[in-house]
Image (cartoon, rainbow, N blue to C red; front, side, top):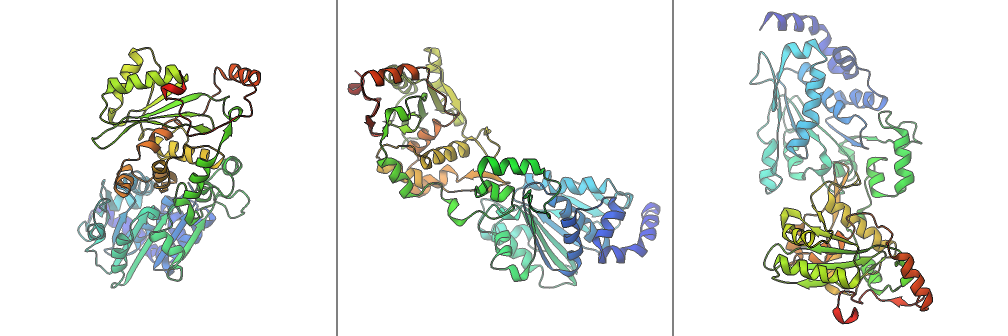
Length: 489
């Protein structure tokens, strides 16, 4: 043992027992920080509970608490093993593991006694038996492969930490539970946003609550016990903007699980009602005419051109085996005959690049959309989730759809969940596997929601013509096809 380590440990030896019994004292004396009230409650409960869970709103400082308790366990137990995992390797690296480095830098005791690396923290004098290890589980693996991430850990002093446990498989938690079977002091500590209505965090807060010490953390601006680290003004703005019952607000502001029914994007009844809905022209004529173009990727997929104006979506055009020049020509024809003002083309994987190039070179404005690109609204994980959720909200607030059974199947198929507090749509390949067909119709419709609806440049002219011809009260059916040549001659 080096002279510096001996000196540090000698001075700390008399305090280690008190730090083990009172982690709040450890945080104040070793890390030099005063925890928030809810954080202090968790710290005080740690010595007396084998299983602890934190169900948290967005941004209250739960990663700090996890790191404080990890350091406490490393310092106050002999030859401990601390195993940490998260919803992904990047999340672990950017979250908890960075917190471990941050707090180590605040303490001469920790910097002089332990060595931090990107995957492991070890005691300088006993690196093989005194450590904290970062583990990843196989997201695409089977249950056994996922469980193997935490397997093989047995010691007298073991702490398993599951960060963002709302999205971690039960198989990973099952392995951690096995580690509690033997040893002197063995614990599981999990924390996360209540994004899923299944998984370890949900179980700990519901069916297994009697086994867990659960701490609920909220940023509700009207709750006196709210986390002070979250802006009360921000919380009020989210509630005012989206409503108290909005799933995103429930998760991120109140720290509550969303209702079970919200994992389905649209129900059959909602879609059927939209397909029966006939709107007067003046209900949508103010809005910009848009085309959503989903370009076929594989042999069985279809290219779909979907027209929409405000609250009414019209019958789409379907093309199979078409070349990019043919698709561009059909889009140009639709624009010329219907007067489309915006064209949104799916350019994910650059499948639509040729169509976009042909349109632009012919003088037609076309906007490429990357489904996996960044969303405008920070509530959404990517552009695809944003467009689909916006489309679903459009249906619910009175949008009219063409009567197409296949479109109904595609619109009611996807589910969604939350990842790191953001809406995440079910992967397209999973939807295709379930439907046995790619949801090309629905994707094309969703492309028309790539940007916020804008007023039509010709809306005033259209209203004047409707009044003159006494057509203002006519009901235009969504299955009417503005792209059919005979209807636009």
